[in-house]
Image 1 (tube, helix red, strand yellow):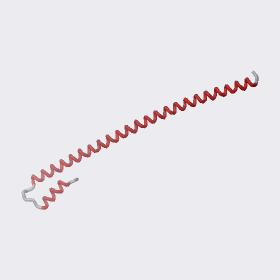
Image 2 (image 1 turned 90 degrees about the vertical axis):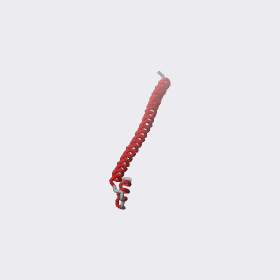
Image 3 (image 1 turned 120 degrees about the vertical axis):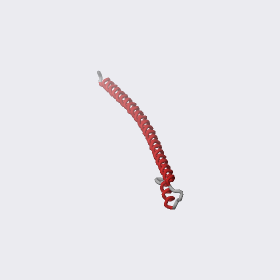
Length: 107
């Protein structure tokens, strides 16, 4: 094999090595890009789920607070009704103050 043939052969080997390296780089880029897309999809889904869970929690908390307030209101009204039944027909300022205090309790 002459020197020029060796040189050409070496150039071909270098070119083949470059092509293999470039192919590996391209495959790795594709793999990383796919992993990035998968992660982005996962992150979007996780954020969406967390937002929905948060909204449900807020709605649940509001509903529980509403029910508790309703129960307390009913209790206060019932107390006022019971005390109103026991009050004599003569109402003085002390009695009026007690009634107002009962009605305004925890409002």
